Length: 251
Image (cartoon, rainbow, N blue to C red; front, side, top):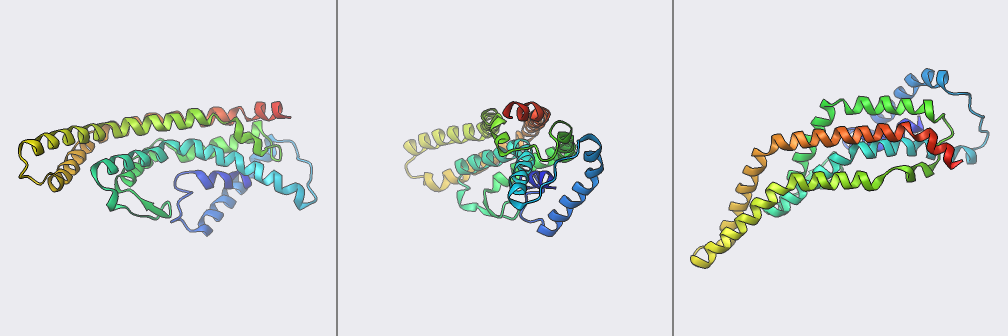
């Protein structure tokens, strides 16, 4: 149950603040109960823990396994939202921030658009089902009670964050480029025709140009997002499969 709960804390959909806590708890309990017979069939019986002090580190370690898996898989979606924030800032949409119930905080308009684009791609690729399947598979290489918080350090966070930054830059580059070109053109117009209020005209031009470029490139954004999400799921599977070796090396 602790390992499943860790996954629910960092997985897209399940980590949304708009989902009732009771529903999350019920799902965690149901998944844990459904996987319990499989875990018992592939894992040796664990040594009983008779005190809370010994049980607490075990629960934290188990939750860390699921949390890391969900966080690795959700990196592309988080950086897609960052790409939308970059685009919105360049286009002057910084004042149009709205409340995002999924994150329980204010979010950029274009950030939400790109996040839900990646979110739909994640569901289309079966990301949620694959994550739960990989999580249950970790019990074959890492029996219950053997996980430690130190396993977090075994994740290649540099590669995960680097891939996410690369995705954010690739997605935001077309909009950033057209905004730079628009600024240069508007600056030239302002020098040749000083009677035009470039400040008021420029805001509209940048917004329209950026939205058009983003609309024309949305198919490419979907393809790039699918590629990065698939890669993040593969990275999650590789890390989950190596947990046994990492734990044995740590001991």
